[in-house]
Length: 380
Image (tube, rainbow, N blue to C red; front, side):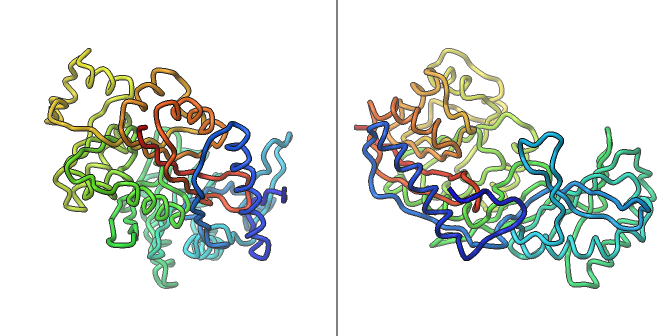
Protein backbone atom coordinates (compact mmCIF):
# COMPACT_ATOMS: atom_id res chain seq x y z
CA UNK A 1 0.00 0.00 0.00
CA UNK A 2 1.33 3.43 -0.90
CA UNK A 3 2.02 5.70 2.06
CA UNK A 4 -0.87 7.91 3.22
CA UNK A 5 -0.23 11.54 2.34
CA UNK A 6 -1.08 14.40 4.70
CA UNK A 7 -1.44 17.91 3.35
CA UNK A 8 0.02 17.11 -0.05
CA UNK A 9 -0.82 15.19 -3.25
CA UNK A 10 0.82 12.85 -5.77
CA UNK A 11 -1.13 13.20 -9.04
CA UNK A 12 1.22 10.94 -10.98
CA UNK A 13 0.48 7.98 -8.69
CA UNK A 14 -3.18 8.81 -7.98
CA UNK A 15 -4.57 5.89 -10.08
CA UNK A 16 -2.44 3.44 -8.08
CA UNK A 17 -3.70 4.84 -4.77
CA UNK A 18 -7.31 4.43 -5.91
CA UNK A 19 -6.88 0.95 -7.39
CA UNK A 20 -5.21 -0.34 -4.23
CA UNK A 21 -8.14 0.85 -2.11
CA UNK A 22 -10.69 -0.67 -4.47
CA UNK A 23 -8.86 -4.02 -4.50
CA UNK A 24 -8.80 -4.08 -0.69
CA UNK A 25 -12.55 -3.46 -0.38
CA UNK A 26 -13.50 -5.92 -3.15
CA UNK A 27 -11.35 -8.57 -1.44
CA UNK A 28 -13.16 -7.83 1.81
CA UNK A 29 -16.52 -8.46 0.11
CA UNK A 30 -15.25 -11.70 -1.41
CA UNK A 31 -13.77 -13.00 1.85
CA UNK A 32 -17.21 -12.62 3.42
CA UNK A 33 -18.91 -14.47 0.53
CA UNK A 34 -20.95 -11.46 -0.54
CA UNK A 35 -22.21 -11.57 -4.12
CA UNK A 36 -21.59 -8.18 -5.70
CA UNK A 37 -22.21 -6.68 -9.15
CA UNK A 38 -19.42 -4.98 -11.07
CA UNK A 39 -18.74 -1.77 -9.15
CA UNK A 40 -18.94 1.73 -10.55
CA UNK A 41 -15.82 3.70 -9.72
CA UNK A 42 -15.95 7.45 -9.19
CA UNK A 43 -12.48 8.94 -9.00
CA UNK A 44 -11.71 12.31 -7.47
CA UNK A 45 -9.72 15.11 -9.05
CA UNK A 46 -6.10 14.47 -8.07
CA UNK A 47 -5.72 18.00 -6.63
CA UNK A 48 -7.82 20.89 -5.25
CA UNK A 49 -10.76 18.68 -4.28
CA UNK A 50 -11.36 19.45 -0.60
CA UNK A 51 -13.85 22.22 0.22
CA UNK A 52 -13.33 22.46 3.97
CA UNK A 53 -10.33 22.04 6.24
CA UNK A 54 -8.73 23.34 9.41
CA UNK A 55 -5.17 24.31 10.27
CA UNK A 56 -3.29 24.94 13.47
CA UNK A 57 -1.41 28.24 13.58
CA UNK A 58 2.18 28.48 14.83
CA UNK A 59 3.83 31.87 15.21
CA UNK A 60 7.52 32.66 14.97
CA UNK A 61 9.30 33.45 18.23
CA UNK A 62 9.26 37.16 17.49
CA UNK A 63 5.54 36.99 16.58
CA UNK A 64 6.10 38.64 13.20
CA UNK A 65 4.91 35.72 11.05
CA UNK A 66 3.10 32.40 11.28
CA UNK A 67 2.80 29.00 9.62
CA UNK A 68 -0.21 26.82 8.79
CA UNK A 69 0.24 23.33 10.28
CA UNK A 70 -1.33 19.90 10.42
CA UNK A 71 -0.28 16.91 12.53
CA UNK A 72 0.77 13.40 11.67
CA UNK A 73 -1.74 10.95 13.22
CA UNK A 74 -0.76 8.60 16.04
CA UNK A 75 2.44 10.44 16.94
CA UNK A 76 3.43 11.32 20.54
CA UNK A 77 4.41 14.06 20.90
CA UNK A 78 2.43 15.21 17.87
CA UNK A 79 4.61 15.57 14.79
CA UNK A 80 3.90 18.91 13.18
CA UNK A 81 3.67 19.25 9.39
CA UNK A 82 4.23 22.82 8.23
CA UNK A 83 2.43 23.79 5.03
CA UNK A 84 3.62 26.34 2.50
CA UNK A 85 0.73 25.32 0.21
CA UNK A 86 -2.20 22.92 0.37
CA UNK A 87 -2.95 21.24 -3.00
CA UNK A 88 -5.50 19.01 -1.23
CA UNK A 89 -7.74 22.04 -0.67
CA UNK A 90 -9.73 24.03 -3.18
CA UNK A 91 -8.05 26.84 -5.06
CA UNK A 92 -10.07 29.29 -2.96
CA UNK A 93 -8.67 27.79 0.25
CA UNK A 94 -5.13 28.09 -1.13
CA UNK A 95 -5.76 31.70 -2.11
CA UNK A 96 -7.21 32.37 1.34
CA UNK A 97 -4.11 30.92 2.99
CA UNK A 98 -1.90 33.12 0.80
CA UNK A 99 -3.86 36.27 1.64
CA UNK A 100 -3.96 35.53 5.38
CA UNK A 101 -0.18 35.22 5.28
CA UNK A 102 -0.01 38.56 3.45
CA UNK A 103 -2.42 40.63 5.56
CA UNK A 104 -3.24 39.03 8.93
CA UNK A 105 -0.29 40.34 10.95
CA UNK A 106 -1.42 43.92 10.25
CA UNK A 107 -4.38 43.33 12.61
CA UNK A 108 -3.60 42.81 16.29
CA UNK A 109 -7.07 41.69 17.38
CA UNK A 110 -7.19 39.10 14.57
CA UNK A 111 -3.73 37.66 15.15
CA UNK A 112 -3.08 37.85 18.92
CA UNK A 113 -3.68 34.47 20.61
CA UNK A 114 -4.92 32.96 17.33
CA UNK A 115 -4.37 29.19 17.35
CA UNK A 116 -6.51 27.73 14.55
CA UNK A 117 -8.19 28.67 11.26
CA UNK A 118 -11.10 26.77 9.71
CA UNK A 119 -11.92 27.16 6.02
CA UNK A 120 -15.16 26.41 4.15
CA UNK A 121 -15.36 27.06 0.39
CA UNK A 122 -17.64 26.33 -2.54
CA UNK A 123 -17.18 25.68 -6.23
CA UNK A 124 -17.71 29.37 -7.03
CA UNK A 125 -14.57 30.20 -5.06
CA UNK A 126 -16.25 31.88 -2.07
CA UNK A 127 -14.92 31.40 1.46
CA UNK A 128 -15.91 31.45 5.11
CA UNK A 129 -12.93 31.53 7.48
CA UNK A 130 -13.26 30.99 11.22
CA UNK A 131 -10.49 32.41 13.40
CA UNK A 132 -10.21 30.56 16.73
CA UNK A 133 -8.60 32.27 19.73
CA UNK A 134 -7.18 31.46 23.16
CA UNK A 135 -8.50 34.75 24.55
CA UNK A 136 -11.69 36.73 25.00
CA UNK A 137 -12.41 38.57 21.76
CA UNK A 138 -13.10 42.29 21.77
CA UNK A 139 -16.22 42.07 19.62
CA UNK A 140 -16.27 45.66 18.39
CA UNK A 141 -12.58 45.67 17.50
CA UNK A 142 -12.83 42.24 15.88
CA UNK A 143 -15.62 43.43 13.60
CA UNK A 144 -13.67 46.56 12.61
CA UNK A 145 -10.49 44.64 11.80
CA UNK A 146 -12.26 41.67 10.15
CA UNK A 147 -14.18 44.07 7.91
CA UNK A 148 -10.91 45.68 6.83
CA UNK A 149 -9.37 42.24 6.20
CA UNK A 150 -12.44 41.30 4.18
CA UNK A 151 -11.82 44.39 2.03
CA UNK A 152 -8.17 43.34 1.59
CA UNK A 153 -9.33 39.96 0.29
CA UNK A 154 -11.94 41.58 -1.96
CA UNK A 155 -9.30 43.79 -3.60
CA UNK A 156 -7.39 40.58 -4.39
CA UNK A 157 -10.49 39.06 -6.02
CA UNK A 158 -11.57 36.71 -3.20
CA UNK A 159 -15.01 36.84 -1.54
CA UNK A 160 -14.76 35.92 2.15
CA UNK A 161 -16.67 36.18 5.41
CA UNK A 162 -14.96 35.94 8.81
CA UNK A 163 -16.06 34.38 12.09
CA UNK A 164 -14.34 34.92 15.44
CA UNK A 165 -14.51 32.10 17.97
CA UNK A 166 -13.35 31.82 21.55
CA UNK A 167 -14.69 30.24 24.72
CA UNK A 168 -18.43 31.05 24.85
CA UNK A 169 -18.04 33.48 21.92
CA UNK A 170 -18.96 33.27 18.26
CA UNK A 171 -18.86 36.57 16.39
CA UNK A 172 -20.07 37.02 12.82
CA UNK A 173 -19.01 39.95 10.68
CA UNK A 174 -21.67 38.99 8.16
CA UNK A 175 -22.57 35.29 7.83
CA UNK A 176 -21.26 31.81 8.67
CA UNK A 177 -23.10 30.28 5.70
CA UNK A 178 -22.10 29.59 2.12
CA UNK A 179 -24.23 28.46 -0.84
CA UNK A 180 -23.02 25.42 -2.77
CA UNK A 181 -24.38 24.05 -6.05
CA UNK A 182 -24.69 20.30 -6.55
CA UNK A 183 -24.49 19.42 -10.24
CA UNK A 184 -26.17 16.20 -11.40
CA UNK A 185 -26.82 14.79 -14.83
CA UNK A 186 -30.24 16.36 -15.29
CA UNK A 187 -30.47 19.26 -12.82
CA UNK A 188 -28.71 21.41 -10.22
CA UNK A 189 -29.49 21.68 -6.52
CA UNK A 190 -28.58 24.43 -4.06
CA UNK A 191 -27.36 23.78 -0.55
CA UNK A 192 -26.64 26.23 2.24
CA UNK A 193 -23.68 25.01 4.30
CA UNK A 194 -22.85 26.36 7.75
CA UNK A 195 -19.21 26.60 8.81
CA UNK A 196 -18.56 24.31 11.75
CA UNK A 197 -21.36 21.89 10.80
CA UNK A 198 -20.89 18.75 8.74
CA UNK A 199 -20.78 18.98 4.97
CA UNK A 200 -19.24 16.57 2.48
CA UNK A 201 -15.58 17.68 2.28
CA UNK A 202 -14.98 16.53 -1.32
CA UNK A 203 -17.65 18.19 -3.47
CA UNK A 204 -16.81 16.02 -6.48
CA UNK A 205 -17.30 12.81 -4.49
CA UNK A 206 -20.50 14.32 -3.07
CA UNK A 207 -21.92 15.02 -6.52
CA UNK A 208 -21.10 11.47 -7.61
CA UNK A 209 -22.79 10.04 -4.51
CA UNK A 210 -25.88 12.11 -5.20
CA UNK A 211 -25.96 10.96 -8.83
CA UNK A 212 -25.55 7.32 -7.75
CA UNK A 213 -28.43 7.70 -5.28
CA UNK A 214 -30.61 9.29 -7.97
CA UNK A 215 -29.82 6.41 -10.33
CA UNK A 216 -30.99 4.00 -7.61
CA UNK A 217 -34.42 5.67 -7.45
CA UNK A 218 -36.13 4.65 -10.67
CA UNK A 219 -39.94 4.33 -10.86
CA UNK A 220 -40.44 5.90 -7.42
CA UNK A 221 -43.01 8.58 -8.22
CA UNK A 222 -45.83 6.70 -6.43
CA UNK A 223 -43.86 5.66 -3.33
CA UNK A 224 -42.15 7.50 -0.47
CA UNK A 225 -38.59 7.94 0.80
CA UNK A 226 -37.37 8.06 4.36
CA UNK A 227 -33.86 9.26 5.25
CA UNK A 228 -32.36 8.92 8.72
CA UNK A 229 -29.98 11.53 10.09
CA UNK A 230 -30.20 13.74 7.04
CA UNK A 231 -27.87 16.47 8.35
CA UNK A 232 -28.39 19.65 6.34
CA UNK A 233 -30.39 17.70 3.77
CA UNK A 234 -27.97 16.94 0.93
CA UNK A 235 -29.60 13.66 -0.14
CA UNK A 236 -33.08 14.73 0.92
CA UNK A 237 -32.99 17.79 -1.33
CA UNK A 238 -31.40 15.96 -4.25
CA UNK A 239 -33.81 12.99 -4.24
CA UNK A 240 -37.13 14.62 -3.33
CA UNK A 241 -38.25 15.19 -6.93
CA UNK A 242 -38.09 11.44 -7.62
CA UNK A 243 -40.64 10.45 -4.94
CA UNK A 244 -44.27 11.09 -4.08
CA UNK A 245 -43.32 12.21 -0.54
CA UNK A 246 -40.17 12.36 1.57
CA UNK A 247 -39.71 12.31 5.33
CA UNK A 248 -36.25 12.91 6.76
CA UNK A 249 -35.04 12.87 10.33
CA UNK A 250 -32.29 14.73 12.15
CA UNK A 251 -31.72 15.24 15.87
CA UNK A 252 -29.37 18.26 15.89
CA UNK A 253 -30.99 21.69 15.75
CA UNK A 254 -28.63 23.62 13.44
CA UNK A 255 -28.53 20.94 10.69
CA UNK A 256 -32.32 20.61 10.96
CA UNK A 257 -32.78 24.36 10.49
CA UNK A 258 -30.33 24.32 7.56
CA UNK A 259 -32.14 21.38 5.95
CA UNK A 260 -35.45 23.25 6.15
CA UNK A 261 -33.78 26.28 4.58
CA UNK A 262 -32.41 24.08 1.78
CA UNK A 263 -35.83 22.57 1.12
CA UNK A 264 -37.25 26.06 0.73
CA UNK A 265 -34.33 27.21 -1.45
CA UNK A 266 -34.98 24.35 -3.90
CA UNK A 267 -38.76 24.94 -3.99
CA UNK A 268 -39.49 21.45 -2.64
CA UNK A 269 -43.06 20.94 -1.44
CA UNK A 270 -43.29 17.17 -0.84
CA UNK A 271 -40.74 16.90 1.99
CA UNK A 272 -40.88 17.25 5.77
CA UNK A 273 -38.27 16.89 8.48
CA UNK A 274 -38.80 15.45 11.95
CA UNK A 275 -36.43 15.70 14.90
CA UNK A 276 -36.47 12.00 15.73
CA UNK A 277 -33.81 9.37 16.33
CA UNK A 278 -33.81 6.10 14.37
CA UNK A 279 -35.28 4.27 17.38
CA UNK A 280 -38.08 6.84 17.66
CA UNK A 281 -38.85 6.52 13.94
CA UNK A 282 -39.25 2.77 14.37
CA UNK A 283 -41.54 3.32 17.37
CA UNK A 284 -43.65 5.80 15.39
CA UNK A 285 -43.96 3.49 12.38
CA UNK A 286 -44.98 0.57 14.59
CA UNK A 287 -47.47 2.69 16.54
CA UNK A 288 -45.65 2.06 19.82
CA UNK A 289 -45.42 5.79 20.61
CA UNK A 290 -46.90 9.04 19.40
CA UNK A 291 -44.61 12.04 19.18
CA UNK A 292 -45.51 15.71 19.56
CA UNK A 293 -42.49 16.47 17.38
CA UNK A 294 -44.30 14.79 14.47
CA UNK A 295 -47.46 16.73 15.19
CA UNK A 296 -45.54 20.03 15.41
CA UNK A 297 -43.92 19.25 12.03
CA UNK A 298 -47.40 18.55 10.62
CA UNK A 299 -46.48 14.92 9.86
CA UNK A 300 -49.01 12.09 9.89
CA UNK A 301 -46.74 9.08 9.55
CA UNK A 302 -49.70 6.88 8.58
CA UNK A 303 -50.04 8.81 5.31
CA UNK A 304 -46.66 7.58 4.03
CA UNK A 305 -45.98 4.59 1.83
CA UNK A 306 -42.30 4.13 2.63
CA UNK A 307 -40.66 1.99 -0.02
CA UNK A 308 -37.09 3.33 0.07
CA UNK A 309 -34.72 4.02 2.96
CA UNK A 310 -31.52 6.04 2.61
CA UNK A 311 -28.93 5.62 5.34
CA UNK A 312 -25.48 7.17 5.72
CA UNK A 313 -24.36 5.86 9.13
CA UNK A 314 -21.12 6.66 10.98
CA UNK A 315 -17.98 4.61 10.41
CA UNK A 316 -19.19 2.06 12.96
CA UNK A 317 -22.17 1.19 10.71
CA UNK A 318 -25.60 0.13 11.93
CA UNK A 319 -24.08 -1.95 14.78
CA UNK A 320 -27.25 -3.16 16.51
CA UNK A 321 -29.74 -5.84 15.52
CA UNK A 322 -32.63 -3.42 16.08
CA UNK A 323 -31.15 -1.02 13.50
CA UNK A 324 -30.49 -3.87 11.06
CA UNK A 325 -34.04 -5.20 11.44
CA UNK A 326 -35.45 -1.73 10.91
CA UNK A 327 -33.38 -1.37 7.73
CA UNK A 328 -34.46 -4.78 6.45
CA UNK A 329 -38.15 -3.85 6.51
CA UNK A 330 -37.81 -1.61 3.40
CA UNK A 331 -38.06 -2.85 -0.18
CA UNK A 332 -35.17 -0.67 -1.33
CA UNK A 333 -32.21 0.50 0.77
CA UNK A 334 -29.56 2.96 -0.41
CA UNK A 335 -26.63 2.52 1.95
CA UNK A 336 -23.80 5.08 1.82
CA UNK A 337 -20.85 3.87 3.88
CA UNK A 338 -17.57 5.41 5.04
CA UNK A 339 -16.41 2.20 6.77
CA UNK A 340 -15.92 -0.90 4.58
CA UNK A 341 -15.48 -3.27 7.52
CA UNK A 342 -18.73 -2.22 9.21
CA UNK A 343 -20.51 -2.17 5.83
CA UNK A 344 -19.50 -5.77 5.10
CA UNK A 345 -20.66 -6.81 8.58
CA UNK A 346 -24.03 -5.13 8.03
CA UNK A 347 -24.42 -6.58 4.54
CA UNK A 348 -23.75 -10.08 5.82
CA UNK A 349 -26.97 -9.64 7.83
CA UNK A 350 -28.99 -7.65 5.31
CA UNK A 351 -28.33 -9.99 2.38
CA UNK A 352 -30.47 -12.60 4.14
CA UNK A 353 -33.45 -10.56 2.93
CA UNK A 354 -31.99 -8.31 0.22
CA UNK A 355 -29.81 -8.57 -2.86
CA UNK A 356 -26.99 -6.15 -3.71
CA UNK A 357 -28.01 -4.81 -7.11
CA UNK A 358 -25.71 -1.78 -7.39
CA UNK A 359 -22.27 -1.07 -5.96
CA UNK A 360 -20.16 2.07 -6.29
CA UNK A 361 -16.91 3.41 -4.88
CA UNK A 362 -16.30 7.12 -4.25
CA UNK A 363 -12.82 8.46 -3.54
CA UNK A 364 -13.79 11.03 -0.92
CA UNK A 365 -10.27 11.12 0.60
CA UNK A 366 -7.58 10.62 -2.06
CA UNK A 367 -4.13 9.42 -0.95
CA UNK A 368 -5.53 7.77 2.19
CA UNK A 369 -6.86 4.26 2.82
CA UNK A 370 -10.43 5.55 3.22
CA UNK A 371 -12.95 4.66 0.52
CA UNK A 372 -16.66 5.54 0.52
CA UNK A 373 -19.04 2.89 -0.78
CA UNK A 374 -22.57 3.11 -2.13
CA UNK A 375 -24.82 0.03 -2.19
CA UNK A 376 -28.34 -0.49 -3.47
CA UNK A 377 -30.14 -3.32 -1.69
CA UNK A 378 -33.43 -4.64 -3.06
CA UNK A 379 -35.66 -7.05 -1.22
CA UNK A 380 -35.51 -10.61 -2.52
